[in-house]
Image 1 (cartoon, rainbow, N blue to C red):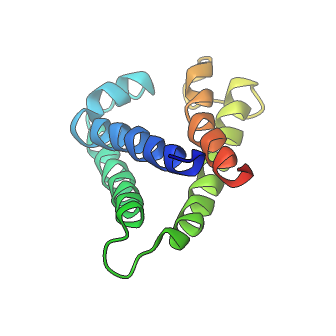
Image 2 (image 1 turned 120 degrees about the vertical axis):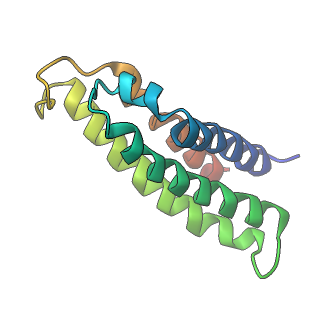
Length: 128
């Protein structure tokens, strides 16, 4: 098994975990994000479905189902890389107090590191 296959499998598992958690356990994410409105869990469910769609596309390209091939994977990973880069920049800006948080409280570093994990895996995928 080569490094790109391992990266592909890791992104499927990592994204699948967060898609499942956002979709079915969105109240926990609302608490982690310090959002106490009762509507927030309902707002996070679509994010879980979007992430689940991305994971489904990763699975389809991994197993080469239908017209999708392994050569389509870099296109998907570039889009994920852009999203993770912008999410990391935004969260680091909140952590370093470049931008104010909505409630004035400190932003946790764990929220800034989460998008960095798949970004590093995507960089490794293209580096090898």
